[in-house]
Length: 370
Ligand code: IPM
Ligand code: MG
Image (cartoon, rainbow, N blue to C red; front, side):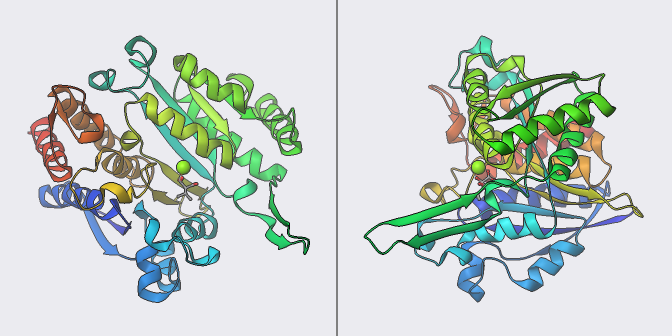
């Protein structure tokens, strides 16, 4: 059995609580002898700043670089509101994405049948929903320079963010979206703002070209990002794969999350390019929800997005796709039993804690495999 090296970065707020539930799942795999995971832990975000004055240290970056997969919790909180911009908690996550070149962010939004009533939308709109957002993750306005605030000296300041995309960045993200679409319903919506942004014009052009060259079997639609947001709440099941840039992907994935019942349901995978020799990709797996400082430490957090993210690690980094499916099945079964963390509960549901949810999923994994 090959051993897989995992770097666990729980981070801040509810990050530590949901990570504890992933550790429960990891122990289950190790104890059953199904896989061998070696884990190390590091600091990222506000806790890393408190420990060594940076949102992630060079030594933890080196561990991340050497790991088969990084499992990431969440970063940030009001405690660090006044920290200088380059050292704010989010800078740790952005450095991981950028330095490991994790350009393809996969954010699946699936509405489990048992949760259709927890969604903000009517049951018939979301039941059976299965969307995959492919968010470009290392370009655009997140990283473009200049990124400054200048004092104009007349009582005014000027803030500048820069949205930049080169052909290759759009090309490689589009290819991942088309490849994924081939394994699903064969449909991609590419979303940008070509009506006001030059990056949108180029995005549209490159996606069209890649499609014509290598993926003409896929049904491609172009949709303006504002319309995409609207359509996601009007008729979400028209979508299969949504391909979009870094900023629009951030926003659209939060919208998609609420369709599934809660922000606490969405896992994600951030993947780099395939290594030519080993065929392996650098990868980081994180829940889409944040650190939720308001509920941290109370046992309220929903660990499903975090455990689902570990499932994605099994699928995309460990070649254990059938086990990823078992984790999804275990989650579905637990939800079907009516067990709910607070974020998912509607009137009359039994509310359980973060740890109870983790334990219930592991129990269900046992039941599914015995
Ligand atoms: C996300 C988060 C991050 C982002 C923050 C924490 C920097 O919102 O992963 O969606 O904006 O990308
Ligand atoms: Mg976000």
